[in-house]
Image 1 (cartoon, rainbow, N blue to C red):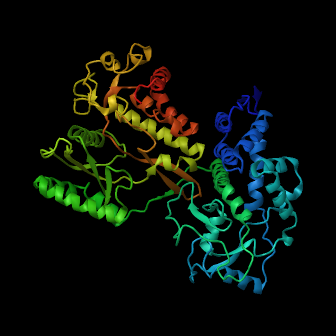
Image 2: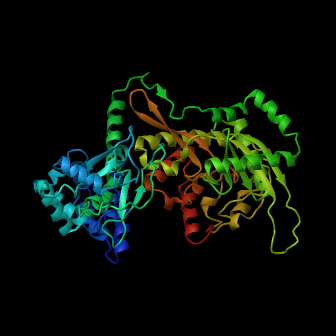
Image 3: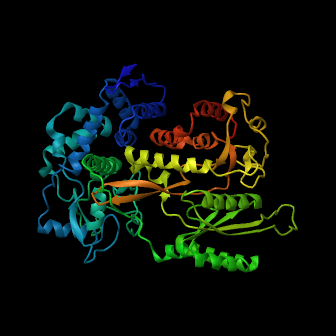
Length: 581
């Protein structure tokens, strides 16, 4: 065992297989607990390398030497040599510029679109020249060798030292200005199709963005000679290297934003945190707000008196309109976004539908947790079937308000450690409020209505219970007599606090810093009165999907409420033995 400079132990890597080597070095990186996004940068170095196994072996040797921070700095230097300190290659003269425009067919090489007055076509370098790569620093050369392979690296170092020898046609192309900016930022990349040197697939892979993707006319650009005049084509090595660096470029930008914000926070004084809302209210969302006002409440009371058939027809019409405007089931197969700041959720079980509606009403009445406001519910039994093979589901719908934000699983990557900690503190507050929701039949383990409870981990969501005590409830699981399954309070729980059900939003402050907050908690169909460890362990059921830093932040939210380490231990042992899978 070797030790990193921070004191972390680096295990000897198992060389049994390439995949095992890559997975093991990823575990080593995660265990170093480097400040985000340093660990992500090292992960990108391995996964985006020409030969990931070779890169994993190199990185293992570096980390075993105890210089994780120096390794990150070297990779940062390599990226900065292109995006920050890189110099433009010798530009084409007027004749060559015209030839490049002609070769590329007077269209953007990436988007396939013609230029416009506000977004013109320009001839730009594919990549800046990383002249600092040619400084003959051994660590940088070795790192590039492992990332690109020696032959590929030698070509790049030769080009970095003498860019004037490269034909201008090979390192320049015609591109829209906005696309060129996105390309430089690593948001757009071109992945070369196998066995071709001129055919590519366009991928837009921002780490996170509230802006819509750039418009692309055709996903498969052809970086050939559209004029058939024999002009030299764009060298695939520039495009290919950029594709391998895209993710690291974005992480480097993110790191610098975090560093800048940290410096501002260090000098911030009270009163400097006036913020600008990230989501400006729109007319459509205000309609949803109207339905929560007193006039809106009166309107809803009258509306609910209409027959189910009329209301159901209206909701189905809105559902079709929502599918046309926003896509059919974009967020989930059972949830459809509607106009006017509303959502319509469909259930296949009447009891589960009533449970979620009641849970949302209880949360609205007893807490300040940002959750959808339940507006209406329609549950109708299924019509009798004439075929034993065709068993229709009942018709169950909940109309609810929209909550802003994005699931945290889509944006935790762009959140700093400080941001995640802020979200964790907010979650603690909301969990505390949940536990204060009173229970009519105290101590009963049940859904919110006092009936049978459900969970994806319990017999495939089969209704079970209710249970008079925790001892009888624990008999459903493996290791029922373990101390971790005894002696808990029965409290109100959400039942499915995974990263898809916690919505967060970004706020910009006047001093240039940002913060994130929980803007909504959704999907309450599994809510009920359960042992107080339930939400904690349930949030870790899919822990393998999320990075360690996210799992740690969620676990930190539960620590002020109790130590659930032994409960999580017995749950993990049960899951690993097949319980709930």
